[in-house]
Structure formats: structure tokens, C-alpha cells
Amino acid sequence: MNEADRKGGRALDFFLGGLVGASAAVATARRLRRLRRLREERLERPAGLGAFESAPCFEELLEQQAGGIGEWTRMEPTGPPADR
Image 1 (cartoon, rainbow, N blue to C red):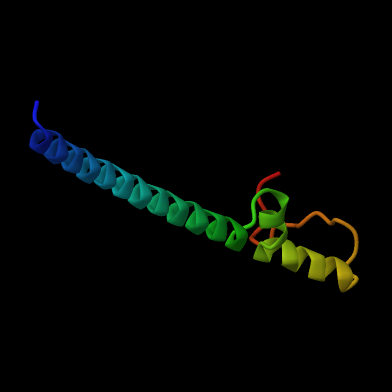
Image 2 (cartoon, one colour):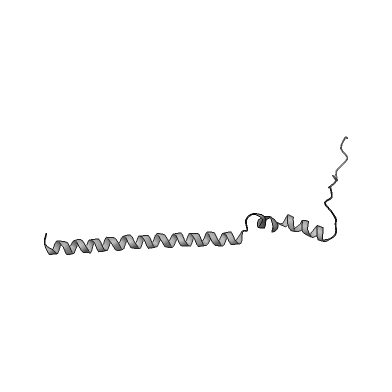
């Protein structure tokens, strides 16, 4: 094997190594961008009890309780009386 063949092989190895490294960097950047987007979405939409507490129906219930409407009351039907 002469020296010219080795230099060409080294250049090819260097080129292929750079190509693999660049593709790994692009894949990492995509993954980090996706993770950042998921984190931001998670902060915008609370999970668990936090999601329930920000629901309009729960806020309305809190306003009713604060307004002195009283304890939990049973709602009576407003339609015509049913056969009992």
C-alpha cells in the first residue's frame, strides 16, 4: 500500500466522520427543540387538580359559595311535575 492510497483513505474517513457527527448534532437539536416545546405546553396546560381548579365550572362554584348562596343544596327540577 503506497502513501497516496492512505492519504485518500484518511480524507474519506475524515469526511465520513464529519458527516456522522453533523447528523448527530442535527438529531440532538431536533430532540431538544421538541422537548422544549413539550415543556412549554405542559406549563400552559396544568395537569391534575390544577386543571380542575382553573375550569369555569369550578370557578362558578367558588363564586356561589363566596356569595353566600349557602351550603350544598339539592337542585329541584324546574319542569312540570312528574308522576310520583
